[in-house]
Length: 120
Image 1: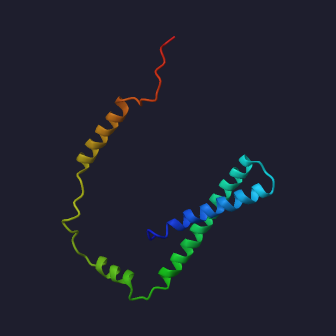
Image 2: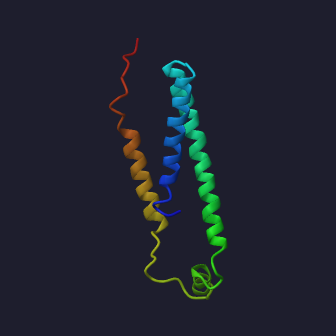
Image 3: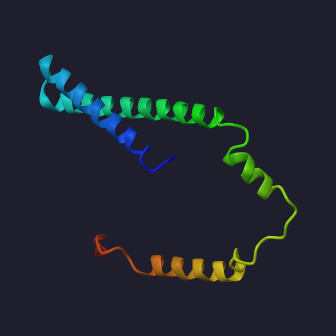
């Protein structure tokens, strides 16, 4: 998904909230009920806009000419070339050691928001 396309979902949610909230207020509901219905409308229209965007992008990709970018990438990646030396993967031992260190740090220091209770 392109960077500008992701904002369409946010725009849909905003439009959904405003429309459902406004309609609920005009129907005489209290503010809390209007906010709840606006939230449901936000979710509904955001997902609807996302689905429409997905269909539009899918149709654009399928209508791309056969000599397009995708087929050129297939030609490049389909060869039996050795992996480049630029893509160096970290050793399993290094990853395991850093994971153990991070876990030990997270477990050994309690969260500052946790209140300690004195034993009774």
